[in-house]
Length: 192
Image (cartoon, rainbow, N blue to C red; front, side):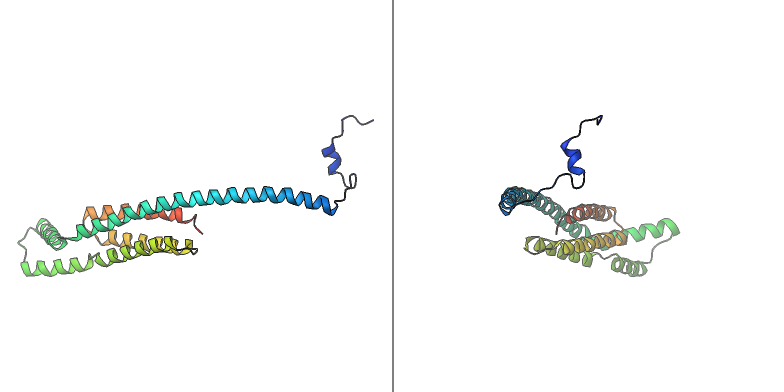
């Protein structure tokens, strides 16, 4: 006598206890049921992917708009930089050395500082990367890797802008831009 009841599940796990043979008609019926279930699952998956893609696109468009606004604001903030650097150097020299500043020497130093701190090229490249990003988003081809690369490039431009800038407002904008690019990059990881 066996102390416990034996279940069908237990029997089915034992080798050679149950044997069955499927006939072609049974195989066909099983396949029909499976095909219906698979078709439904694939349709649901495609609907979910479509919905997720639209939400992702909305988020990316919003982030890109904010990046464009930052680029425009950076353009505005670069106006009058020569005068800013002139005053910045004059104040620094007079604070440290407590002497009258030689105007021609000051102008030379302002020109050198302005050249080193010029961020116009970075802003132009940043705007170009944003445009390329938008263009890729509108294309029908797989673009995840390219979008990720553009994120790296935008991040690099913002880092260079922050490193070159002597103005707190410009540095702040570049940090905000890098933060947005990081958010975009997180989303881009979900794109094929």
